[in-house]
Amino acid sequence: MTPREVPEEVPEEVRARLRAAAGAHRPDRARMLARIERGRAAGDRPGPGNAPTPRGGWVRVAGATVAVAGVLAVCGYGVASVVREDPPPRRTVAASPAPAPRTPAPAARGGRDGPLSSGGAVDPHSNAFWAQSEVTLSTTRPLTSLRVRLAVAQTGGVTSTGAWRTLPEDDFTLTARERAGFLVFTWTLRAGRTVPAGDWIFAGQYDHDRGGRDAGDDRYTITGTADDGQRATVTGDFTAR
Image (cartoon, rainbow, N blue to C red; front, side, top):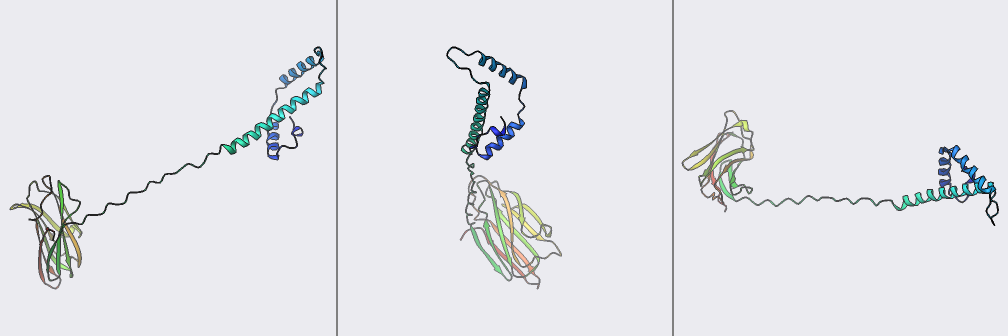
């Protein structure tokens, strides 16, 4: 089929596709000639009561049929493409759960002396097998000497699992020893080091027997010397008040 045989009512886009298809088509010449010869033979031998079919008309009918089929195929493809357009996929956004509120630690009121004040608390994330006791030191002046002593009563199975502080590690020596029914953590400021004014935490960590541990007998003592030479000592416990 040549571009001249495309019906005029066909959209220009379809006509362009048909032209491209016609240009790319490579007909089987031998097969086409054989079909034409068979058509001629059939036209030369009409049956009773049937008029001969003009050869030219037969070819035009075949060409028109192919053209209409091509137009319908192309148009149908376009309609199917529009109808089958898939909707955009749904997207599920996973929302992060809100953080659980932090339970206030049972804190005890500490002492106050000169530039020093303090407080003790059991970390709220302690559990049935493990706990962390925290001593908070506040100083209004720099300290040239400091010793923090945390005594955890041996209530059963109490053994050290570590310790930390918010001041530089290299500025302190640390010991954790059993003494007279207590596990004692001791931080001592090294000679020539200074503790700046501010709030600082010293924490001891330990395992214990299963169950809720009673911290009523735990104690701490803090002794320090300010940069003006004033010495001060504060003590406290871990019983909530």
